[in-house]
Length: 275
Image 1 (cartoon, rainbow, N blue to C red):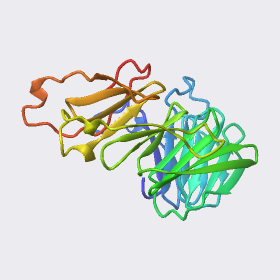
Image 2: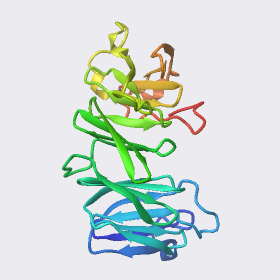
Image 3: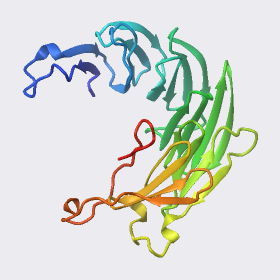
Image 4: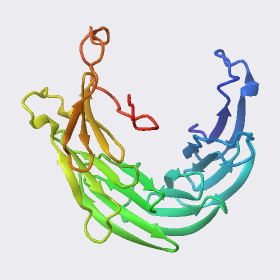
């Protein structure tokens, strides 16, 4: 919470009234607020390994088991904003001025370097391609791709609107003001970050007008879904931008009060379905 407390709640044993206090474990009480907490989506069934990673705004990094035990800790002494981890080998921590690459197993700093900005709030984009050791930061209309390895790193810069994210490690998307979507290859680090394709769904005369600002995007390694309203979602080839198909129409009973903008599109784990 904002007062520096960190609690772990077992939703299986928790009651609606909250009277079952045994379902809540207090992990931490810090003098500084918690900047970020990450929970492993595939936790250790024995509750012995690190499945929770937290960091305070002062840079106190903590590794917890689901049993509530502190496995290890590390003090970064930096004004931390957020963190990302694969719960296998790497933790990436972003502060107001720097990026820290942490060895997940040894709880030690592998490298630290300036990202080039003075951030007072979370960046518009912060994603990590752990497989290829890339970090993408977006701030305003600029984004940077940091390729880290050992104690060194390389950086490339590009320009795009503020919504930038990594999907499947090789692609990132950005929503332009006109509702169009750009796809970049962030693993091509030999020159400038290349724009693979730009999809412009609202250039079609059949598309609804005035909903461009509602655009939401999801993509995997092959398909990109672009939508704005519940009954207006379309699929494209993520590499060529070729139109593939329209999303399934929803039941009229969900639109009797009018169509509302969608808040998010997300593919299922296998990529064969989405919500």
